[in-house]
Structures are given as C-alpha cells and as structure tokens.
Image (cartoon, rainbow, N blue to C red; front, top):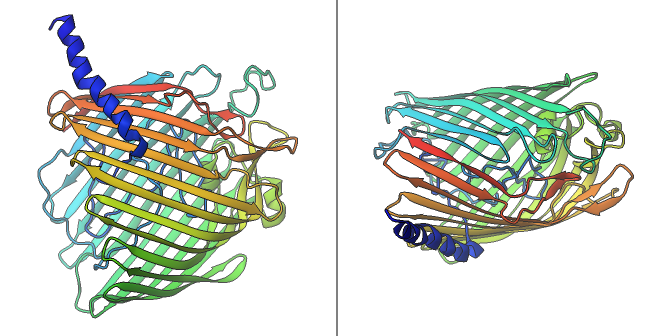
Length: 561
C-alpha cells in the first residue's frame, strides 16, 4: 500500500474513532457486559451484579475510606478492569438460588496478554476456564504487572496474583465451591521527601507482602422439598511482610433461608472472623455475628426487618439491618431507605492493602487507644435514595449519614518520612453518590459516577486520607465488525487531607486523569492492545509526598483460544 493510502487508512480507521470517543467521554462509562476482549467469566444465575467500584491508581493502592464502603485501586494498567462506583443495587425479587450452569454459546476458553511500556514495565495476564456446562466448571487465572525502572529512583513495584476456582454441581442438588490463591506484591518506600534529597542514601527500602488464601463453600443448587436454601463455608489466609509481621485469618459463614409462599423469606446467618497478628508483639481479635431477618415482598414494595448482633473484644453490639423500597413508577423509579451497622476488623492485611507504605506494625497512636494488632471499627449507616431505569438507561443515587468509631486515619511518621502511622478517631461522614449508565447503538456504552462526602473527626483537624470528591466519566465503543474496542476514561478527584511529620495539615493536589485504550484483533484469535494513560501527566499524590507516575504507556499482544 502506498504512503498516501496508508495515511488515509489511519485517518479513517484510527483518528476518526479517537475523535468520536473524545466527544462521548464527557458522559462515558463501562457496563457490566463490557468485559475485556478475550476475558473468560462464568456468571451464575443468582449472582450477576455490577463489579465493585475501582478507581485505577497509577501506583499503589487506594483506601476504602468513604461512607459507602467502596474500594479503589489506581495503577498503570487499566486494561483488565472496568471503573464503577460501588452504588449497590437491590437484589431483584426472584429466588437467588444457584442453578447448574446453563448451556452457553460456544466461546473462547482462555486468553493471554503480554506487554510492556513506559516507564519500563512488564505485563502478563491470562485465564482459562473449563466446564462440561452441566456439573462443574474450573477457572484458572493469573496476572503480573510491574515497573522495574522509572525516572524517579525507587519508584518501582510489582504485583503478581495466581488463583484457581471451581464449582461442582452434584445430582443431589448440592454444590461445592473451592478456591485457592496467591498474591505477591512488592513496593519501595520511594516517597515522603523531595526528589533529590539524600536523607535516605543507598536504602531502597523494599516492602514485600505475601498472601496465601483458600476457601470452601457448600450450598444447595436446586430447590428442595422444604423450600430452604442453605450454605456453609470458610475462608483462611496467611499474610506476612518482609519485616517479620505475620497475620493469620479464619472466616466462617453459615446460614439458611426459609421461603414462604415462594416470595417472602426468613434468613438466619452466622459468621465468625478470627484474626491473629504478631511481630515483636502479638494481638488477636474475634468477631461473631448473628443476623436474623425477615423480608416481605409486596406487589410494588419490599420491607426487610432484621438485626445484626455482634460479639467482639469490645463487648456485645446491637445493630439495625433494615431496608424498605417501593416502585412508584414500575421499574423506572424506585425509592429506598434503610439503616445498617456492623463492626469490621482493621487487620494488618486490610490497612497495608489500603496503604502499602504504612508502618510495619500498628503505630503508637493506635496502640494507646485500641491495643496492639488488629482492632475494630464500629459504624452505623443511615441511607436513602432513588434508582431505576428505562430502555438502555440505568441510574441510582444514594445519600446517607455514617458514624464510625475507631476509624483508621493515616499520617506521616515523624521518625521515617517514607512511612505512615495509623491514627484512630471517631469520624462522622455525610455522603451522596450515584451512577448513570447508558448504551447507544448497541456498541457504545457510557457512564458517569460521582461521590461527594464530608468527614468530621471528633478530635483531629481533618480526616486524613479520605477523598472528599470523586467524579468519573467512562466510555467503551466496539466497532469494525467487533474487531476493535476503544475505551476512554476521565477521572477527577479532590486532594485528600494530610498531616506531615511537623503536625502541619493540608490538602493534596487534585486529580485529573485522562486515559485512552484500544484493542484490535487482526485475526479471530490474535490481536494487539495499546493504552495511553494519564495523558495530562498530572502527578497526583494519593499519599503525602508519594506522587503517581505522569504520562505512561502500556501495549502488547493478545491471544485467545
């Protein structure tokens, strides 16, 4: 092909779609259906749902720090996950019984992606699924992503995960699910001070986290003669770092639901979470939850009446588990309101996942108030909102008031500027969040999501680490006979409050992150992908003096089989 023809082809087939995406990016988003090309996913009948909200960090992990229990990640490679706010949708008024996998259309069993980029990085991701479509399925998946050289010294990391999950459906109407996984995450204490400072010469300060987990669950996959759904399962994990901190966790979950007139139900759930932590000191915590509830389904409304009884080291707690919803205009308009509460454990695994630069053991500020090792945060959440949809448009808005006792905040350590201490305080949060998604022409999916929250600590000047405002636009366009998928994301966030080693309080710079990504399959099974991330090159500091990467690129090849 001549140079003129090549230029014409690029303008027509590459530049034009890119310009069109830019127009749509002001209302963009990605739906549950918008899985990456070649992604293998098995969705059981009862648990199809929106993915958890994830804001993709350029390096490191973002904390679960808001009023609606949302978890964000922000990394260089956004190719393999979609961004959605965790605005939870009510379960439909149908029996949530897992059925044997129905016969699906022929598709690819697996995929493999291999790539590299700038800053110098390596990327490998793959998955394989095997099933006989009647009695069992097995999923194998793995991912490695890391940056091994960057302009800023020691601003490198690697994240590796491997896992196997499978379910066997027995003829007796009972199913058994099992899973095992391994995570290896390596970071460096590269921040906390100005670039070029020699305060930590020759000390790369490696931080390595290893997590091994497994679980088993037994549940009924068919309706039985007693009209009772049941489940029983457990999860275990072992977590450690390279500074002799270790943690072991055991979680038990058993329960049953009795159906009345095939639509009302009484549910009893019992859970137990046991954590044991140790480094130079040892600590443990054990929470037992008993949750009875009754749900009444009317023609246009639903009412859930329940309680959450918790026994923990802090004593016995009583929390509401209430919710009412009503359809006032069919599926187009649904209003809801509720009250909930619980105690969750701030384990070493949890806090170091939220902030991988946290001190090895729990800081003195936390120890003096709640003791060494894992501690509990108690919360009450009172909320209400509106949601619904019509045709290809769906929306939901949720607002509430949440109280938190012993909420974990992160402040810069006074002795080592690269690390953070845990500081606990009672924090009240008023929040409002929502999501609007729409599909156009069956090939273009868009969404916009937001979260605004005001946090008021009882003692501290600000809620260090909580992001007050976040806004995201996302779009995905499938074209060229479904061979080319183009995605765009624009994420905006205000800077989070911080407290440095001198006790000075401030707010970080805001986030403005625009990313464009594309994947094209030249043949039925072979393709290539390219991502241009953080095009505006805004070095957002999610944690004080820990800047993210600027403009970065990741590309490679895709194979599906």
